[in-house]
Length: 248
Image 1 (tube, rainbow, N blue to C red):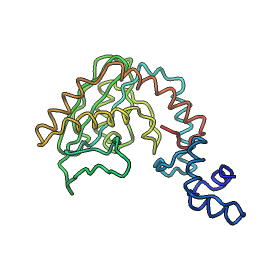
Image 2 (image 1 turned 30 degrees about the horizontal axis):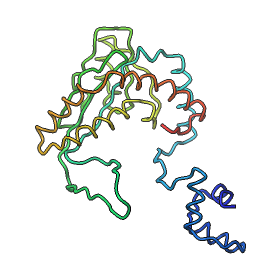
Image 3 (image 1 turned 180 degrees about the horizontal axis):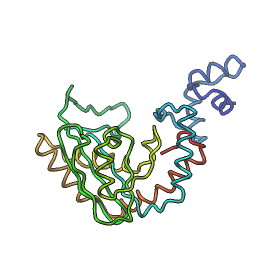
Image 4 (image 1 turned 135 degrees about the horizontal axis):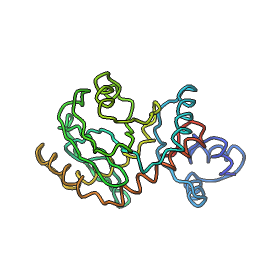
């Protein structure tokens, strides 16, 4: 009965389930409900935050995914930007029951913008810059013309100047669907890098930049291989979901 309640109403809590069963003359406590749900493989956790997708978004995501299904992932250069802040990052900690770790943060922490790229055969350069990346910022690529660049739909990538630079330098770009950050495995890369940098606890801006560059170089080589190989799974999951959100 408990499982039926949660399957019929995914917003139900242990308390609301217990109350609902009591109205059906079934005496049970919310604690017992939680225990039964855990035994059945359920866990009480926050939902995933995903962008709101319109029907048009889903159609475009599905169309792009089908085109990318036949793309050799070993010939893709994955690129992305992120912001890394000075201070702790959100992560999980092992804590005793009844105890909560306190992480002290500042209202406006110092931050640095970072751009990086990688492919199956290695990591590219990582570039730290204090201001937002502009379309006029010089980008660094190798000489291998067989590779295709994957970047998001940020306006700076779509600017006339950026397009002209890529055209003159023979840089072919893969189409990237709107509202689809989960397609680019570089998102996972940033999460790992942020945690590794934060664990070293930099206490000033120069130290933050230095650690970003050091930790980037120390990223394990098999990590980039796993990220590239995950691209196929991401595309397949997107097709299976018919353009809707996936678990990535």
